Length: 106
Image (cartoon, rainbow, N blue to C red):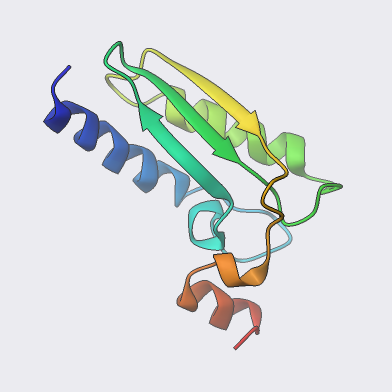
């Protein structure tokens, strides 16, 4: 897989992640800053590290599964290693400026 192919898949992953929302917050997981790492490997496997706004997020399973379904549906993705991470702890500063405005943090 070429670097250009990897970038194209990564762009599509980001586009799909922007369609995943926490039902309690009107901002997508990507703009919230919940996605810590996206890595597309030469074999078309994808690693994503993500967190939640709270380690006890009541809809974490729903969000996690939505991310999995959407990323695995992308043409060219062979599989996904989706990992929940707790470090660094999420803060509103990790969200985009637009997301912070939407949530009332600015």
